[in-house]
Each structure stands twice: as structure tokens, then as C-alpha cells.
Image (tube, rainbow, N blue to C red; front, side):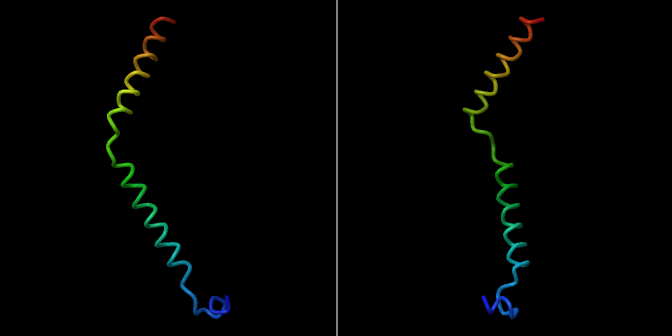
Length: 58
């Protein structure tokens, strides 16, 4: 702890900036991943149910 008080410790702002950058990079990569086929199928089923329910209620 005394090293950090004297300024000899790592630059916390630089470390935080690097962590932020890495998290942004991982998040962006995740957003660019393609949706798995199973999820697409489930979404299509939900949309079909939703539109069938709206047509019946109208």
C-alpha cells in the first residue's frame, strides 16, 4: 500500500482505461456474432403465435 501512496504503484487510470477498452472490444465482438439457428427458430415460433393471437382477437 505504501508504494501506491508514494506514486510508485501502477497507474490506476491507465489500468481502468485498458479494462474499459477490453470490455468494449468483447462486447462489440459479441454483438457481431450471428444468432444461433435454434434462437431464430424460437423467435419465428413466437412471432407466429403473436400474429395468430392478434388475428383471432381482432
